[in-house]
Each structure stands twice: as C-alpha cells, then as structure tokens.
Length: 212
Image 1 (cartoon, helix red, strand yellow):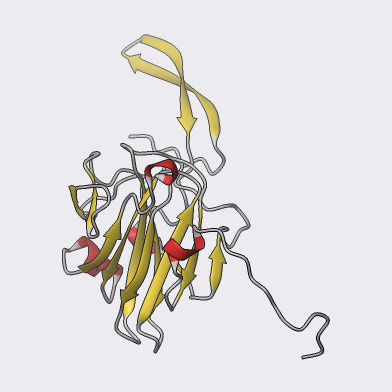
Image 2 (tube, one colour):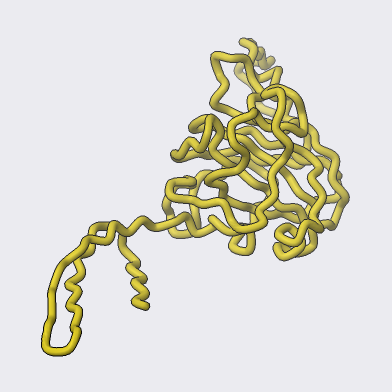
C-alpha cells in the first residue's frame, strides 16, 4: 500500500515498477490531488462569534465547499419542501458540507443570512463534534430556499432560539445536488429582519447638518 499526501493541489505523476522473478515491468500514472476545505469535517469546525460578516478562513482564503465531502455518519435534516423550516430540498441530502460552531450568548437568539451560491444550512445543539457523528446532536433549525425563486441561491435562518452558554454546530452544504463554490454569511445574535432588508427603504436623518 502506497499513501500519497500532497499538500498542494495539482497533477502528480508516479512511476510504478513491478517484479516477478527475473521479469519486470514499468508504467506511470497520474494522481490528481484536490485539497479539501479546512473545516470539511465536523471536528475541524471553525469557531464563529455573532456580530457581522464572515467570509474568510484564518489563512485569508474565502470560505468555500469546493472538494468538501460527506463525512461518515454525518447527519442531515430531512428532505421535503424547499421553503419549509427544518427541511432541505429533495436533492440527495448532504454532499459537500463544511462546519462552524459557536457558543450562544445571553440574548438567546441567532440569525444567519448566506450569500454566494445555492446553499442549505442547519444548526445542531451538541457539546462535542463526536456527539454530532454519534447521533447525539439535536437539530434545532434548518433551511434551504429562504427567499423567493429569483434569489433561491441564498439560505437564511431568522431568530433561532438558543440556550445561552451552550455550544452549537452550523452545517453549510451545497444544495441542488451538491453545488460547490465560495460563500459568505452574516451571523447575529438578534433578529436581522431578513424579509425587511429585501424591501426598498429610504432613511431620513434630522437635523442636517447636526452636531450630535
């Protein structure tokens, strides 16, 4: 058994020689190496904190699920209607997910709003990543197509109730049968009014000019 562990994506050519008695033969083959996201597995989930926009890994690379995989025993919400809370579309379940985690703040609420490509999202309550994989996590929120059809690529979770001080895991997966791409999300610990921000609005501030 030969194990290859390239750290840079690309094509690697290997020379193989086999022997049997006084005979030998040589051939080559090419291994195409693809690097998975650093938070592909639930135990490599990245910690996040409520307060604004998230879009880059600690190394500066933009969030993505390119070459991500479905981990053994990885959970997923039930499939059904695309716009129904706690369900994902009927598109084959989780396929190329990445993971994040957070500790709930005293507000007891969280909201997520994603952008980038057709995604699906879920939140699980669990103390450890092992609980997630052993079926001991509790699904508390999920969504696939939050918006109208013309904005189907974004998913969102609005005002999800969480228990202060407890740990939660966030699963973001490509929808539509396993879409891959780059994405970002807004994470707050209070309602975002996701529906409201889709509407046009004019804000007037008085007095102008002002000093306070």
